[in-house]
Image 1: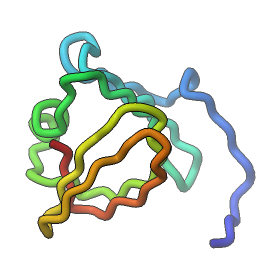
Image 2 (image 1 turned 180 degrees about the vertical axis):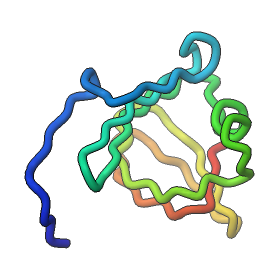
Image 3 (image 1 turned 90 degrees about the vertical axis):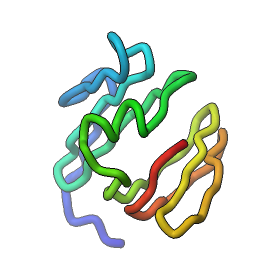
Image 4 (image 1 turned 180 degrees about the horizontal axis):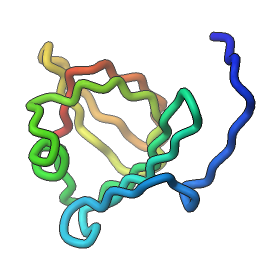
Length: 104
């Protein structure tokens, strides 16, 4: 893929916006950075975080309809796709997850 835009760098501390998950961020936080053509999210999910509890209720969708590309630094997240496929994202995993997923 050819990138046709100037280089842009942001640190999570310079996030354009933040979303606290749970009471006062007890379940984690998302630091959202717009890099012009790409949105990068630094995600921290604390133990007890669940997509069904902390994201689905806010957005109203049964399944996440956004594709995700990422790298798991630490921890484990169980993913379930609409087609029935299930897998875990663990420390050191790079991933591409299509739309139509939720985490258990």
